[in-house]
Image 1 (spheres, rainbow, N blue to C red):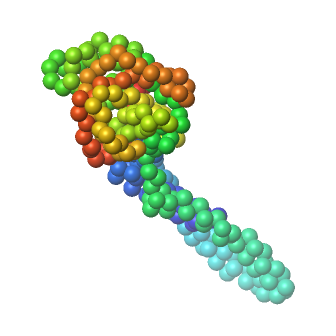
Image 2: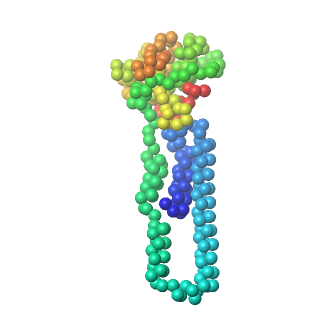
Image 3: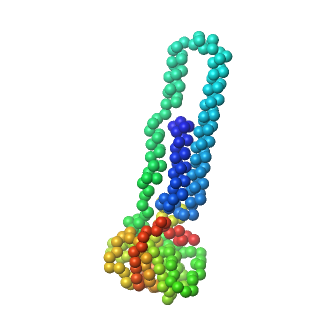
Length: 265
């Protein structure tokens, strides 16, 4: 691939990163905290592409000027060159500058990134991976009154490792997508990220109490309930899964950021 093609690919990649970072598209690939780095990377790539193209054109202009001067000074010598040598030189130049067109296939992944964004990981991945619940270094104090709105990882961590110390007797609201195991047991799940979707792992809450009679996997649900010390073990890795005793539940729209980043804070 020649310099012009390299510049074009770098420019397209930078523009794609800027497009993803300026919309919610980037949330399908990396966590929200990496947005500034994504935008910076896109800007750097575009600047590098423009600089590469400018230097290439500048070098070509200087080369053409030098060739013109050399031709003027040594025109008589050039007249004595044979047509065969000239043809060989042209053939060599054509061979040197001919680039394989297949290299432009590198652009296809960039188009796919913009046009065909992958869906967020859901129940299929969650039920084939063990819970990734981790013990936090500490937990922030919760409001003294009113219902508690907690993330799946936050509730699960407090229920398991803090033994529900600040959860007892409180109304709790948790939002996640529904997953069902082989026996039909329902879970409320969020996929947790370290940095990007490639390392996403599930954190699960088992549901008990007044569970809706019909639950569809991957449907998003806001469950309202209370803490219970009941636990179960994840059948995949034997990790701890706390229960939430549901008093009511309602379907909700899928959030713009479907991943949970609170598990490793």
